[in-house]
Length: 249
Image 1 (cartoon, one colour):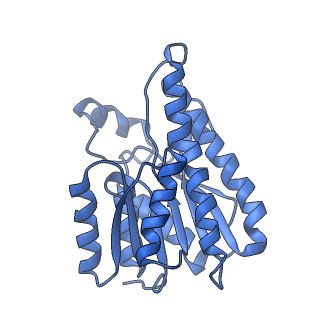
Image 2: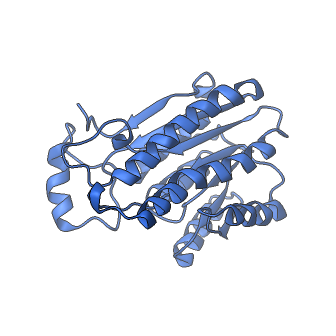
Image 3: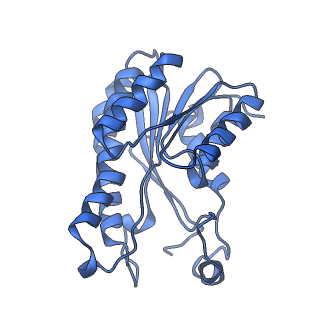
């Protein structure tokens, strides 16, 4: 087992299931203590916590709506009770709305921008203050989306895509600003990743769209994030890593 993240404390927003869960488990396997942020499914969040504790790591689940600035304050206030430092932040939380652009309401736009972009800013601005206290800086990873860089033939998630495009610009701007503090900032763009909301129809057509011929797993994203947070990626910052099986080729 790789213990290169031993002694590190990681925070994952939206970490109770799906991609967030895969990231949390991988970081714990690599030696990190992990804080899980969640909004719903308390049972799933505590299941992840128990699994991580079973590895001998410290773990904590905190319910907070990071789509609001007050929620971000709650998250960090509760985290401070048990953890005085933060080395790794993974901005994974983000809602998804499927709607043709001309049918997208003002409420949809607000939901996408707050849930995907502003939430990442609010959490990151607080995380950086903790990372400033550590000797070796830290690592921040934003979870993006492939359609933030390219519009597909049937892009029915325009508001989501635009919010994720903002995430990439935010991450790359922070990489430049935080570099002198030795805080590295990167983006991982997942492709079609297995999750419990996939319908039978989705499972039928998705693999045909991917050159590798299959959908990915949350562990694939966890592996990418763990690499970016490790010393092996010590000179990697401001990059966008596509983990999508060649989806846009």
